[in-house]
Amino acid sequence: MIQEISFGILNLGVEEAEAREEVRKVIERLGITPFQDRPTHALSGGQKKQVSIADILVMHPEVVILDEPAAALDPKHTKIVNDYVDQLAEEGITVLIATHDIEYACAWADEIVLMKDGTILRMGTPEEICADTDVLHRTNLEEPGALRLYRRLCARGILKEEKHPPLSIAELERLL
Image (cartoon, rainbow, N blue to C red; front, side, top):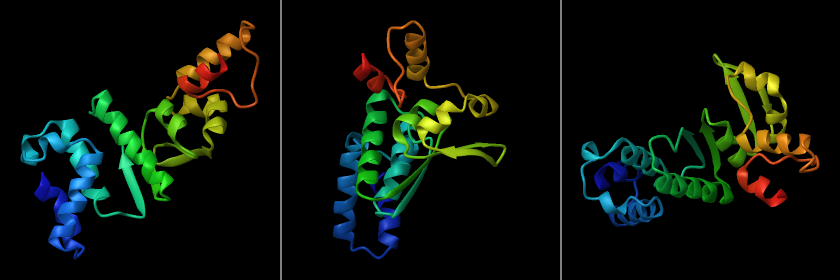
């Protein structure tokens, strides 16, 4: 696994000692140190996903494109990867994520692009996208569960309508 993650950074001309240190930092941040000495082919699907993310992140790119980064990961490692992706965004690195998980997209993204059959149907903030139930249905997506629950609570008079409705459970909890 170490050799695989080192491949890209070494090909960028980084000295071996520096590359080794960068690899160590990335695998530690991604929580994959426990299986660092195992060959990549012997890893589980989720572990291979983490290694592929480490392959890219060790090279310190300006833009990171991830396809379903949490797919095949257990909850613990999903949180580790998500926290690391959050940190990358905070450091000014552009992060593009392809996902079918509208709740994940709404909780994480600044902007969402909804596509169907290779065509962009709608672009906007999570709030704008979730307000457009027609486009959600055309892309076979449902509103985030927190938003559905919020609307039911408002309809029953338990909560009052907010200018910016909650799109995640954490946001809904703050209103309660």
